[in-house]
Structure formats: C-alpha cells, structure tokens
Amino acid sequence: MTTASLLVLSAFLFTVGVAGFLLRRNALIAFLSIELMLNATNLAFVAFARQHGNLEGQMAAFFVMVVAAAEVVVGLAIIVAVYRARRSASVDDANLMKF
Amino acid sequence: MINVLEIQAPTVEWMPLLPLLLVFGGAVVGVLFEAFAPRSTRYVLQTGLSILVLLGAGAAVLFQMADLEPQTIAMGLLSHDGPTLIFWSLLILFSLGGVALFAERGVGDGQSAFASSASAVPGSPLEREAVRLRREHTEVFPLLLFSLLGMMLFASANDLITLFVALEVMSLPLYLLSAMARRRRLLSQEAGLKYFLLGSLASGFFLYGIAMLYGYSGGLTLTDVAAAIDAGADNYWLLLLGLVLLAVGLLFKMGAVPFHSWVPDVYMGAPTPVTGFMAIATKTAAIAALMRVFYVGLGGASWDWQPLLAVIAIVSMILGAVVGLSQNDLKRLLAYSAITHAGFLLVGIVGAVEPGEGVTVSSVGAVAFYLLTYGVATLGAFGLLLTVRRSGGEANGIVAWRGLGKTNPVVAAVMTLFFLSFAGIPLTAGFVGKLAVFSSAFQGGFGWLVLVAVILSVVAAFFYLKIVVAMWFQDAEDDSDTVVVTPSLWTWTVVLVGVLATIVLGLLPGGMIELMNNFSEFIR
Image (tube, rainbow over all chains, first blue to last red; front, side):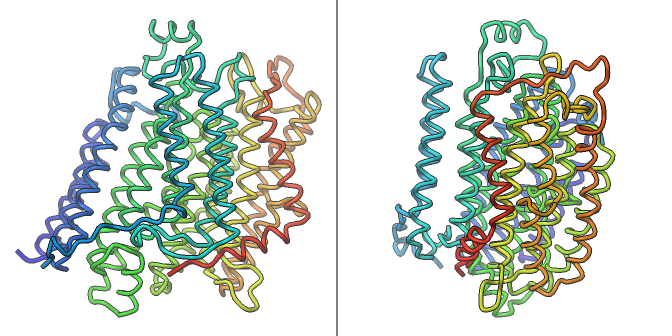
C-alpha cells in the first residue's frame, strides 16, 4: 500500500466523521463521530511515519489515543448530566439559548 | 531503521519549568484535599493553596524574566523565551483574578456561584438535600489550576503534539466548569454540552492539521516545519491544508468568526466567574500559541496566511459589532464584544512586526499589552456583573441596569470606565492597547486593514455606549426589584485592580509597552 492510498482512506474516514457530527442529532453519536475523526487522524499519522521512516508519527498516535480517552471521561459526564436533566440526549433539544 | 539501543534518556531542564511544575503540583494537591480534607475546611484550604501557588509561580516567572536566556527546553518540546514569559505572567495574573471571582461568596447568600451538587438532577430531592446542607464544589479551584497548566503549556509549546495535548488539558476543565452554575442549571449544562461538542470538533480539525504538517515536514517540532518550508519540500498542498486546519483550531479557541458560534451561548450559560476567567485566559493562551505557530513554524509561508487572517479579522470585527448591537443580555453583549476584540487582536498579528531598529512597538509587545488592558477590564466587568441581582439571581438584562447611575453611582461609574476602555476611548488603557496594535499592523504594511479596523472600532463603540446611556440617562422601571449587593473583599480587589490598571495604563503606558517590547523575540 502506498502512502497516497492510506491518506485517501484517512481523509474518507475523517469526512465520514465530520458528516456524522453535522447530521446526527444524538449527542452520543455526534461524539462517536468525533472519535472517528481522531482515529482517521491516527491513520494519517502512521501512514506518514511509514513514509518518512521515523517514529514521531507513531508516537503521536499513542498521545492521541490517551487524549481521546480523557475526552470521553469529560464528555460522557456532561452528556449524561444533560440526559438525566432533560430525558433526551438530542442536541436539537438543547435550545434554551439562541442568537 | 531505528535501533532501539541508540535511544538515549531525555534531559529535562527543571529550573525553567518551575512555574509549570508549581501550578501542576498545586492542582494535584488540590485534588488530594478534595479526597482527604473534611468538607468544612476545604474552601479555606483550596483558596489559600490556589493563591499561594499562583503567587509562587508568578514570582518564579518574574525571576526568570530578570535573568532570561532564551532556549528550547525538554528536548525541544517547549520554548523558554521572551514571549513565553510575558504570556505566562499574563496568564498567572488573570488566573489570580479568576480565583478571586471563584472564591466570591458575599453576593449569593454566603455561597459560591457553583452548584451544590453538579451531578444531581436539577429539581431532584438529591439536589434539595445538597442545597439544604449548603454543600459547595471546591473542586473548581484545582480545575482552574489544571486549565492554567494547559494554557501555560499552550503558550510555550514548540512541538505540535505538545500543542495538541496542551489544548485538551486547557479545554477539558473549562467544559466542566461551564456546566456547574448554581442557578439556571439547565442553561449552564447546555452551555457545557455545546462548548464540549464544538470544542472537540475544532480539536479534531486541529489534529488533522498537525498530521498534514507532519506529512509535509517529516517532523513534529515547529523548527522542523520551518526548516521544511525553507528547503522548499515537495507537496506544498499538504502545508496549505495543514495551515488552514491548524488555524481552525486556534481561531476557535480565540472565538473569531466563523468559529465563534459557541461564544455567546457559553458566555451566557457558564457561571459568571468562569466566564470572566475563560473569556480572557483562553484568549490569551490561544493568541500566544497562534503567534508562535504562525511566526516561528509557518513564518516562511506568511504570504499564504496573512490574507487569510486579515479576512477573518475583518469579519470578526463586523459581525461582533453589528450583532452585538441587538443584544439585551449583558453577558451575551460582552461575548460579542469578545468576538470584536478577537478581530482587533488579529489585526496586530497579521502585521507580524519583529522588534528591531525603528520599530516603536512589535506585534508581540502590542498584542500582549492589548491583552493586559482587555483582561483587567474584563475580569472587573464580570466581577461587577456578580453584584447586580434580582430575587437572588444575577440580573444580566439591560433592563435591570437602567437607572443604576442614580441608585448606585459607584458601580455604574466603574462599569462605565470598563466599557469606555473596551470601546477604546482616549485616556483609558483600551485606547492605548488599540493604538499599539494598529500601529504595529501599520508598520507591517497593512495600512488598509488598520483603516477598516478604525472605522469598525467606532461602530463597536456604539453598543458599549448603549449600556452607558441606559445606566445614566434612563430611569429604572417602577416595579424594578434590582438590588446591588455589596460583595466581599475578593471581588472588590479584582474590580479595584481593574480600575487602577485601566487608568494608570491609559495615562502612563510607556514603561509597560517598553517592557513587553523587550520580551517579544521568539526563539527559532
């Protein structure tokens, strides 16, 4: 596999993530889409690391995984608190403040 | 291929890292206090610890400023140079203000602005129980320190992955803090949710930008990126894509248009002390990182990013000034004001003037001075927002502030001073800040941008004057139940520092500008 084909796959996954975030209403699915974006980035990092022949990209992928895990802790706490208060995890229902 | 045996143990310079270590240690000890100290002693312990740690870190930064030797530290991951120290000292100063506002208990029936039990469902028996027992979340102080740690790292990172980790360390505590208001908890939780989702999206883009820059240069430090640009590496599109995506993440944290949609909602929903802290500290950190990344890492490609940032500066100033005019809530109004100020600051950054012969004020010096003047006034203004209340809660609507000049001239006069400084009226610090930023952009050859900015700063002055007119020239409604509560010494200190700094820096700015100019050279 060449770097180019890996990059295309990574860009495709990233786009799926962005589209999922923008189109889906459930906060959990939106959050899941963000995780997909981060993992698409990991693929790009690893592909470039293979191309350049150094370890920095692979190391970056590990850092991203750790940060993503930390983000899950905070994100789920907020989503669960909102769900328990409103009985709904839809991002469209969180509309008390507008323009 | 890499031989594992060749890998050497890293060396770490501990003394330059001292301010970071102090803040981190303080935050960790704060978490231990939460685990082991009895509930009744926590407030005193946490406020005392936070203030001590911040003063210690501030003193360490000042000592380092007196004897500065620019260098990259921790294996080239962080840079320890003039701008690092300037922005560290600003961040520590703003955090001191933040801690003081967090600690304010005098206005809300002897309790802080944070929820009794943030995890309890609003209106549930569990929440009523926590309120009855007068519980408080003192975790907010360690959260502030963790956030400050991220901001300080963000301002000094010389490596793209360090930059990403710092971005998250600074943001995650802020997401939580935004969702912890005592009153109007649904609004507050909504603010937390919006901030979190949009913030994570922006950091996703930011990270993809880092991956692209890595692909372009084959290294993760800013030095590698700069070297690759100078050498004219292949695949220039990777650099452009990386540059734009990286800018998305940084401009989001700054709250510049078109990445501003979170700003009004989060400012409005978050507890007022958090808004005050976040408004200025996040902006300072984001701008410090933006300047370092774009000047040091991407300086060779400045022809590609200067027009981009100039356009974003203009739309930020226009949108903030125009939409701000139609706002009736003071916190939302200050949010749009923050968007406008992000535009003004970008004007200075676009100019990209380095210190040298014949330069009156460099970009870094001008922007740092602007942040100082904007920061002291912002913290003071949010402190005053805490004091004007009706039926127990804060009264943030403009209606509640009508006629305040007659009923409480002191609060009205101080608020007027802050607003005049935001608007950039001469003899206030805000005027000198704007002047410095605009003149550095002018020196950088962006005269047309300065012209646009001057015109828009006149437009933006309108909505500050709207509040001033409401306070002094309109009468309060007959059934108005607005009361001005006298806050404790915490808020008074913040307000007093804000007033003194706004006046003194407005009348005698020379020394401070010169000081900041002396510390405005990035290490490359």
